[in-house]
Image (tube, rainbow, N blue to C red; front, side):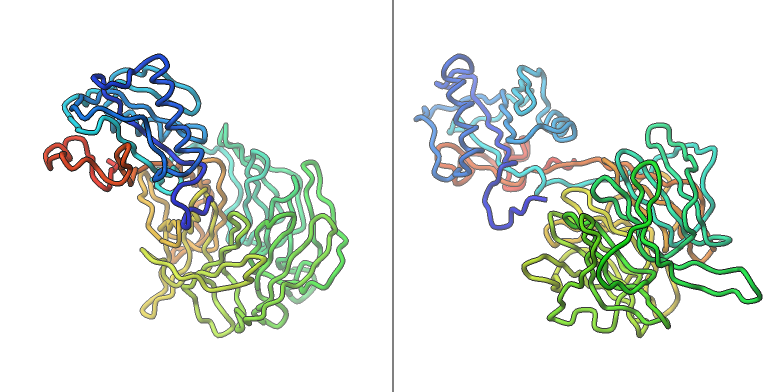
Length: 470
């Protein structure tokens, strides 16, 4: 996710110019090439206010051609949005970064003969989600507190607790929507499974010993990795207290681990890093004494080398509704956010879908009764909003597993007030929609032409907020 809060433009800058067919600047040959070059300069130099074009005639013209240039590769959703909103008639020219369109918008007249719409694709991107149905002839047993990750083009599921502690290791193929059972692993639940350095690492968790007259629980001490063919037990250096219900995510070449429940039901407050290259644990300093009462059943995700953590429950059974971030410079800090903030949650999941952090499900802290969530909250630029869901919306749940692959959010298992939930894989497909937020005129580049009437503004949507969300 590109940080643009302190920049006017960045390298994903979009510029869109309208060119008059009656203009003194021709639509072909050297003059058009000069105009095209000018728009590229706007994007590359990131100095729109200082940039000027050749002098333009003041007579009015009809604007029926649009030139679109994106510094990054045009994606299909953004391109179709441009087509729809500009009522394009003919695609004149196309490359992987540019479009030149002929439109039906020929009734708008400007005193200025050029205008620019500037935006940033990620900054102005929103998403909608549609739950899609897929037939699955065989699927793993129902469970809670299993782990599921996207790894090298496939989805992998490990462990969890259902009728018993599961020792299965399953693969889901996104092309055929079919499950397959792979080799069995050490049975465990409440563990974490993380994809890093082309391998899968499983850390922590608990198993139940059913042998002998007593049924006892014990932590799983072995840390294992899967290399694509078989599992290996890792010998590691450093001190690491075994745990369950912790949270983990990949972080550079390491695995970032927070909290969990340790021996004698103690809720842990530490932050640990497992160096996957050297197989070594070390504890992260916590000068602000964050999570002093411990934290478990929380969710974390890494985005652009920053760790995001939301919710969880502490030693006193208090459930949180705060967002925390960690980076190597500022360490842990509580993050202030705006918008439709999630409630106090535990047993939820978080994934990163650039540029969004997505939070799904969880058990809600309610003084009246225990409730569960099936909402999807998205965080972008420190603002929360709720994703619009279409299709067959799954039941509310907690203790489930989730991961993201390409534009699909995958959910498996969990429980709610009705007990364990369906073993079917739940798949949401995201679609990106865009808006363009700033319009300036050339060569002044400060405001819209003053001569545009309200009627004309409504006709061509030339307002300070130019919406592409319809």
